[in-house]
Image (cartoon, rainbow, N blue to C red):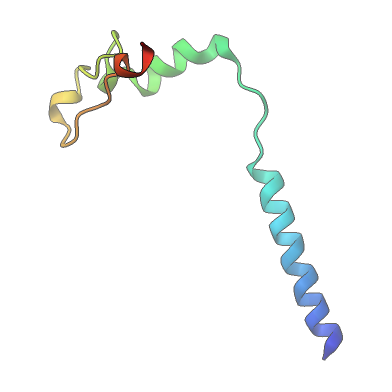
Length: 71
């Protein structure tokens, strides 16, 4: 019975350790930023980062105006 409990604990530790390794990401590439913004953010946050993109009026919650955080 003790060996079974030890196996359960070791298995749980292995799962937790593998999950933390899987969650790690490598360094980003700042050169890809504009393309990623255009693909994922522009529609709501807009080209001027003001939260007035073409899809913004359709949203129930207005997108963030990033100018509030850039000053």
